[in-house]
Image 1: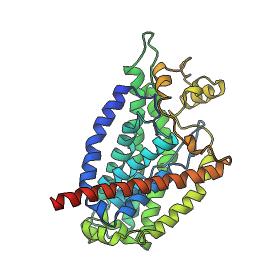
Image 2: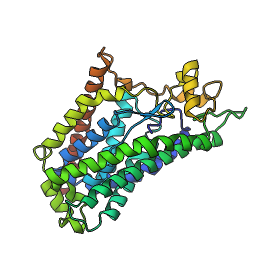
Image 3: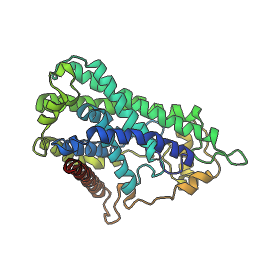
Image 4: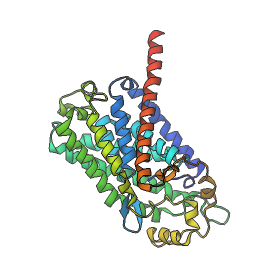
Length: 363
């Protein structure tokens, strides 16, 4: 679901950025007070969790891969506005430093996963878990359904964005300029991966973390508890805890980082994430065709895709730092570096809004 540079036209990317900006702005306004509270470590660990979870590629029939996103647990623990910012931060670090998702397509990726994904997760979870106690099994079921539906909603949006490109943007000969496959190929190909493997993974992760928190730290579920949880949002924030209160989550995240090389076991590339060079390689062309209902890709790389695909070169592409010669250790180091960068971003936001709030108070 990480749309690379070159798959969406510049105008599509501009519309996506314009659509995402109000959500980012509103999210920051809604949580700027929280950024000065003990919830900052929670924001960081949830964002880092989303980052690391997306490194675990899962094999999909047809030779492609997919992954969970962590959007469900982000929405349940943080609430919708903080969650969309947490996932956006994870996607930003992935795009800038690891080349996972494009810079031009960052707005679209955030619309799909960080915004629509978290809002759908939050809405479904609140609907199904309404008035249930914090420890109720109904909240675990609600979490599973919320995660499953949300990741499929995100995948459907991405598929539509892919599939509309050859309809709207072609050269003088009628050849597609960007993503080459129409809606009739893009939607089934994307939804097969997410209605099965990726959707199930998102459901299990979301339900599993909620069940764990119910037993170990139910206060972290108070942010979205509603009346059934018998705690207000402010009480949830106050009891969520800072670095010490989220220590168990950081330890669990550390374990995920160590296990991250498991994501290397899945062979193949996620549908719609092929590089320009893949369209020139005979073996990869065959894989692309097999994953796309046996419809062969264009005989030449789409001109717009080729041009935009090189607009940004990530310093650690594919989670493989150049100074690491061991792929497994490089993957672990990428997870650690990514989490560290996320902590810095969250700390920077806290500092920035702290200065603004202090300045307004003094004035």
